[in-house]
Image (cartoon, rainbow, N blue to C red; front, side, top):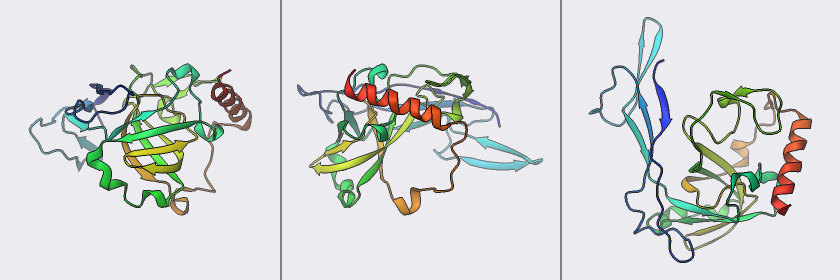
Length: 223
């Protein structure tokens, strides 16, 4: 498989006096993930085609994958260095997901779930390293074996508790997301499907996880 990816344009969000998402000002805002590979056809339809030839899997990509944010995240966390590392260890932290009102109908029945999965764009991340040393860890690891924000495609996700929904605002807790983060999608967390009791934790060992818990508690308390 050949080709490489990089983060493309970063959306600019319009704001009201309260700093909330303004759909009218945000028209045309996009998150682009651009890629290049030999034989790509810029004029082709936006889909991926897989070809098997001489036992080699070739992935033919269109030039750009483009997403339009469905809303924006609001929290008191404005800097990565003071944002909780993992929201599950900071259940007292809160935030709001403000959805563009044109997607309001899509929230139907979401309030039946206690937790949701937020998928978002790391709008403050720049560049990436394929191998780097993660936070509070001595050994380097591959970018796809970590959850760092500096990635080939700067996409993140968080599982948060859904406290309530009022209009186009989702009130959530257990957050680890920067204020102003563009939200790309929302999915319900379904324990019967999403829990994996037999999952391995890989290189993440109990002492490292304890360090993460301690750092998260420190940041969540504002110390």
